[in-house]
Image (tube, rainbow, N blue to C red; front, side, top):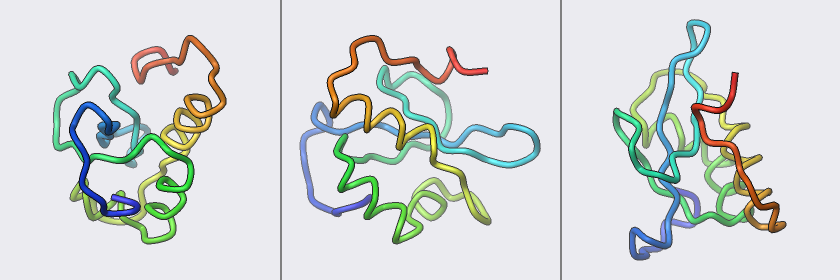
Length: 93
């Protein structure tokens, strides 16, 4: 979504839209098990920033309006800094 470069699926992070409180948010799906349309992103903060700047999350996930992607940004940042146990989307409340 961000840099629009091709890569193997094993190198990419799947992102899905989840409805919370009447609006949609993008959440990381590292296990690739959440239902719904998925979009793929390099797990790199620079790629995430590009996707956010281009407003690509809403278009790629086919969600109308603005979609929050803070959870994806936090996940990608934690992955890059090497923090071990990352919460999945089901662990968040």
